[in-house]
Structures are given as structure tokens and as C-alpha cells.
Image (tube, rainbow, N blue to C red):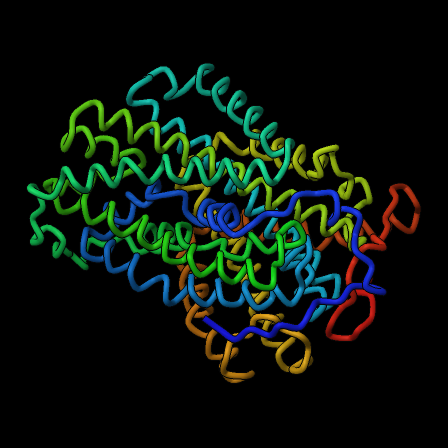
Length: 468
């Protein structure tokens, strides 16, 4: 994937943070499954690609799209995450390249898209269960179910990242296993000709690209908790490499089974349809198993997303970009106020539909990724000799070329967005542009306390503390 440099990442006066000695760090396997759940969590949510474009384009999308988007983003995350192995991740990268104002803007857009993303998982969870429990389809039972699920999973994050990592491993195995069984059962019923069905004239490109984009992004999210990873300069690239393979396989083979073993009815391919396919192929027992797998998958995605987003707020507070109370940790070492803020946002947004959530989230995420690509290239130009324990080969020219395909894709996704989604998303961006000066005013008036953590490493591009 790239080149390794065995140099060490030096902190201020080589002082080791007390947290580093006391908190248990995340190793390769839990990190792999945390990335898996940040990005994927299994094939739940990919059904709309078949409804939008048919079997052939859906299958090709999950083979080709990773090379355009996932691989470049994972490679950039591996290089930048090992260059700046601390909580805050991409906020620190952009602050180092473009200054703290734009670092804050990226943090705001990414955090907001993360909250929107996390609001989706209770929706998907209940969409899979409502066929078995119709009462969860709406009304008070659905509201109470969302609240209960959010409280339980929030408490799990509160208890510690190590617990979340190993929970992700367990949930990942439980989510993947029924599709292995379904694949074996489907072999006699597979008809390869069904995979070749395509009708370009009827493709809903907006739904198709947004669904692909949503299912194959967020590789950079794991960088926000790099400070909690054991030996991140080696662990992070290794986990990202294996996660790319796991994610692609977890999408492609279930789609291969579903489109090849069951007659095509495109209108039926929507959230929860894999459980119906399971019933057709194996009976009620397999359907219940798939529904259980969907539930565990959404639990895994929720806890992984909440971990990265809450540690992002903690990292921003340690840099002085947010009030100091965001850097407060629980007795388990987790970001207390970051977790509470995220849980509140999830509850407020959980009434939105799947398509509305995906479109709004993708729009904000695209803006954030543009800033990350600019920071990546600028740091290659400004600091070519800075220590990069993992480095993508090709020099500055290679870095620019790597960013071109995903940037073109971002432009396409933005261009296909509906007017309503564009207005809401641009309004959210505008709030961030105003919010940072307001926070500076609050700091200057001393209405809230801001501070920079003494445990932070130097900005390795200048060998000076990366302050505000």
C-alpha cells in the first residue's frame, strides 16, 4: 500500500501523556472492525443500488467505486493518521496545512455529517425489525425503541473504547455469518444471467451514486481516535488495508447472492429486503437470523461512529478549538460531553427518512473531503521532508493524481443533489463559518474556558506546538 519509515513521532520534550500509561490502547483486530463499522457494517443499506440501477450496475459499482474513492481515502488516512497520530485526526491535518479556522470548519462539517450518519442506524435497525414486529413501523412504539436503543449504545461508548472495539469484533462476526450460510444455500438457485440485467434509461443516478458513496466512505473517521491506538504508525495502515478488503467482500457477495438467486423485482429492493430474500431461500429461520444480523450491524455502526465523533470533539477541545469541557474524560477515559452531545443530536434527527439522511450527510461530507485533499497535497508541498511513518509513493505529483478521481466524484455527487438538500447543507456550512468567530468572542470575553493541552505533540511540519 505504501512505504514505511520506522522513525518515531516525537512529542513535546518527549513527554508521554499520563493517559498513554493508564488507558488500554486499541490493537489491530478491534481497530479493523471499528473501521469496518465506520464504513460498512455489512450489506444492510446497499439494496437501493439495485432499485436505482439494476443488478449489473450495482455489482460493478461495488467493484469499481472502491478504486475511485475508498482506496485513495484509506491511503490518505494511513499517511496523515500516522503523521499526526493523535485524537482530532483530520481536524489536526487541516489546521496544520490551512490554519485553525479551516480546521474548525472541517471539524464542524464532519461532526455534523457524523451525527446525521448516526441518526440513520436506529432507522435502519427498526426498518429491519418492523416486518417481524409491525408496531415498530411508526408511532409511540418506534419513538420509545429509538430512545431505548440510543441510551443503551451510548452507555456502551461511555464504558470505554477497548470495550467498544471488542464488541465491534463480536458484532462483526455475528453480522457476516448468516450471509455465509445464505450463500451456501443459494448455490443451486443461482442464475448468472440475472447478474447481467441493466437498463441505462431507467437508472436513478442520484440514488445510485449517493447510496454507493454513503456505503463506501468514512475511512478517515478512524483518524479522530488515533491517539487511543497502540503503535498507530504500524497498526493504523495495517487495519485500513484489511478493512478495505473486508468491506468490499461484505457488499459484493451478498449482492451476488440476492440478485442471482431470486427473480428481479427492482421496486422491492429497498431497506430490509435481504431479510425477505433470506425467507425465500431458507425459510423463516434464516429471515430471523438476517434480521438479527441487521440489528447487531446497526449497533456496531452506532458505537463506532459515536466513538470517532466524540473523540473528534475531545481532540478539538485539546487544541483549543472548542471549550475546555469537551476535553473532559469519564473515569473510563471516554469523552463525556462529546458522547452526550452526539446522543442528543441522534435523537433529534432520527425522525428523518433513510434517503433524506444519506443525501444531506453526503453533501456535508463532500465539502469536508475537499478540505482534506487540499491539506494532504499542501503538506506534501510545504513539508516534503516531515516524518511520515507511512508514505504513499509517487511524490507530490502522485499525491495530486491520487486526489483527482475522488474529487471528480465529489463534484458529481454535489451536482446531483436535490435543491432542498443543497439549501439545508449550505445553511449548515454557513453556521460553521459564523460559529468559529463567535467562539473566539466567547473565549475573549472569558464566558467559557478554552485551553490547549500540554500533552499535545509538536506540529511536525514546523517543530513547534500546533496551537491556535
